[in-house]
Length: 329
Length: 116
Image 1 (tube, rainbow over the protein chains, first blue to last red):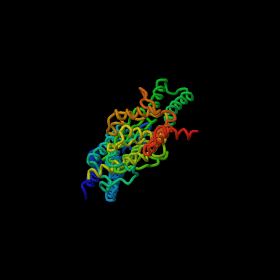
Image 2 (image 1 turned 90 degrees about the vertical axis):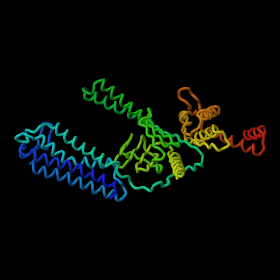
Image 3 (image 1 turned 45 degrees about the horizontal axis):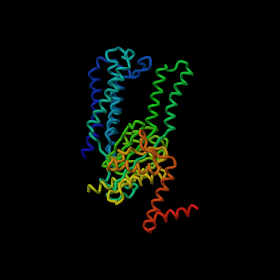
Image 4 (image 1 turned 180 degrees about the vertical axis):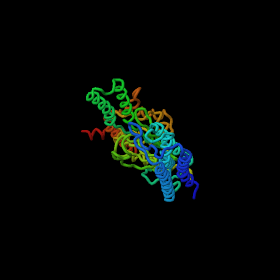
């Protein structure tokens, strides 16, 4: 088994395992100070449900074990099939698997030194322990996992996307943009309109200051989403968003494997704006539907930007990538 | 908008830049009222001198395709697409006439005849 497999899988097994072990140790150490049943659920009026301590221990530690083993098996299968396993996935799996064990520790702590679960402590400490323990496990898993394992990809494969037929020695730059005034106006007006409707209908809506703040934020968001501009040149691809040019993303040419044109629908990437999916490695700068420049990176990640006439941009990116890879070879 | 320059070509760089922009205007890739990229940025992307790009912009301004404004930079004028197409066609016409040894007077005569 390669080193790139060992570290993510070890992180997925070890951190939930440590949390489960800690849960079991707390259960043993605190046994004389705990009632037979512990608090497991808190509602608006405080604790409202308890469960038998032995049953809860078995279920939570069992769930952590099953989740840890299942995620490790899936990770090994993914790496074997060449999909790779990314660091955020490892962190998420460890966080999720640790959650039941963290819940057990929190329940034990809340019910410590009380005669019955009805007198258990409030939900604040419980939430802190659950999020703290599981979050720490996720963060440590990300450290242990290292950079993760990238999907397998033939090294230095020439891009297969469109070409412009750039001659040797010829220099070229592509400048493009897209503006969506409709989306900007909608954003700038819709949110303040809802706030205004709230004021009029309930007569107890937000105060004037809050209303102005809502209006200012929606105008800023609208300006940020009104425009995307893309520059392709020999250094790479630079994507800038909005009237302020932020967020800005520069993708060096050496990171790009291939460029294509993809069509985005209303729901592609889950909506509009900067759409990031750390699990699949997908980032889309999207302010409209329709054709977008899609960059496939050597790391397996994909970056998309909705920009007008992306065919030329994709062609130029592929020509520049081809030139750079032959220049190095 | 794609701008291509070939330093190995006998055509001056500023004319190559202007020709690329003219083609983009003729194809409607940049519409009237839109801004061209700042000269400094385009020069950096093409690894050429900023004055070369500004000279190309000045040429396009003289052809009536763009306006150079102090604050907003180079802005595409209304009807620039048609003018750009005419300028490109006239360039071809003049090139053809030169190759055929036809003088300016003769060529304008031919154009006049076509108009009447």
